[in-house]
Image 1: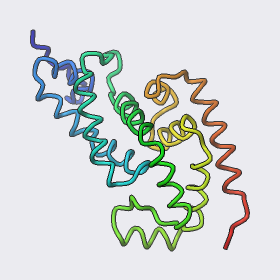
Image 2: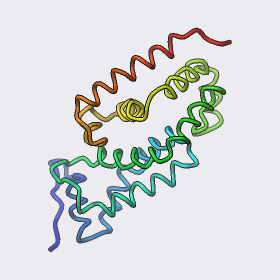
Image 3: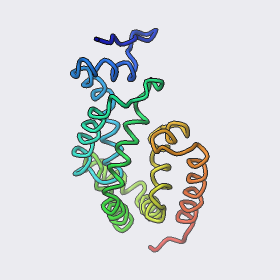
Length: 192
């Protein structure tokens, strides 16, 4: 049976419909990849560095493709699902993530910066703040860091809850703890 995707009023097909269509026509999954791969890659690169970003982004979509039969089509936007898969993969590389933030806290340079010019401009404008932010991120536990970063990429509390398979209340409490820890890190005197 071929499932024809449902088009929205603007003619766009939602993610759930694409995933459903890809069950009979696997090439349709490429449309989902085209929509979200860049965001997922940036999310991973910001957490683990650009050298890992491409590999884990590819693995995220490979897992999503393999799990597409289990996707809950009640959700037209697949971003929380994809971010959840990516976050689980990141958790396996947690030590790398902490090392990444510690290096950024020490040097003030973001190894995932897209260009040397950006790195120089960022360093001149916000080196001290970046170090403090990175130091604060190392103080967060995995759950707090996941919530903070997922909210920072633009997911709602409800979408973060779905991505991490926790309740909205859990997202809220983790975010409150993360804010407190980050505020403390940002208020500490500078070592200059």
